[in-house]
Amino acid sequence: MLNIEHIQSAQQRIKPYIHQTPIISSQLLNQCLGHKILFKVEAQQKVGAFKARGGINAVAQIVERGEKPQMIVANSSGNHAQAVAWAAQQFALPATIYMPANVSAVKAKATASYGANIELIATRQGVDEAVAKAAAQPNVYWIPPYNHIDVMAGQGTCALELSGQIDQFDALFAPCGGGGLLSGSYVACQHIDKRIQVCGVEPLTANDAANSRRAGKIIALDGPTMTLADGARTPSVGPLTFPFIQQLNEFYEAPEADIIYWTQWLTHLLKLTVEPTSAMTMFGVCEWLKQQNTQKQVVVILTGGNIDCATRAKIWQHDRLQELPSLQ
Image (cartoon, rainbow, N blue to C red; front, side, top):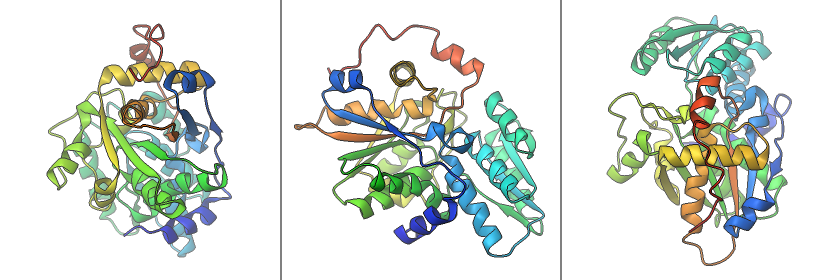
C-alpha cells in the first residue's frame, strides 16, 4: 500500500529531473466565485504534464536497483507515454509505447521525439493486451500509467510539494483517470494536514470511478468513450488506486458542456494552454463551493497542457466566454 515514505523518497529521487511548478491564481475568478482558487501548474512540468513525476520515479528506481532492461514498455493515451519515453531517455534506456489509434496526434509525436518506438493499436483493450504480452518477455520492464506504487508515489510529489509553497489550504482537487494522482495526493495531504479535503472529478461520459465508488467494487467502462478529457479515458481504476479513490472526501462527474466551458475560461483567465482533463476539475470545485458556508482556499492541480488542433477546434466551436463563472 502506498504510504508517505514512498512519496518522500520519490521527492528526493526525482528532484534533479523535474521542475517545482508554480502556483498562480486569477483575481477575476476569485471575485466571481467568492473564494480563493490556486492553480498548481503541472502544465509547465517536464513533458507538459504531471505524469513526468511518476515516469521518472519508476525508471530511476530501476536504475537504482542496478537493472538494465532490454526494453521499457508502457501503455498510455498520451501524457504517461511522453513521461516514460522522456524518463527512459534520461537513462539511455530503450522504450516502446503502446497507444490507442485515437490518441492525440501531438502527444504521439511528442512521445516519438523522446526516442521511443510507438505502436498504435485500434482499441484500448488491444493496447493493454499488447503491452502485457511484451512485458512477459525476458528483461522487459512494464511501467503502467497509474496502478504501480512507484508511479503513484511520483505523482504524489505534486501535492507534497505544496507544503513548501502554501501555508494552508482547505481542499485539493484533481482529475481522475486511473487514480494515480489522486491516490498520491490523498496520502500527501493526510501527511500535510488531515483536515484538507481531497476531491476528484472525472467526465460524466467516462465515469467508471464514480460508478466503482457507488458499487464498492471496480467497475470498468462498457466501451470506448469520446470525451474531450482524453486523459480520463481509462477503462477503469486499478486495484492499487481504488482503495484511495474510495477514501476521497468528494467525487464529481463533469458533463462535456462544463468541460468545454472551463477549458475556455481557464485558458482565458490564466493565459495558459489547459487540457480539458485539467479544466474539468473546476466543475467539481464549483459544486463543492456551493456547499460551503465560509470562504475557502482551494488548490486545483492543472495536470497538463498538451492539446492537438482537432481538440482545440472542438473546444472553441462555440464561444462560452460571454457567461461569467458563478456559483449560482
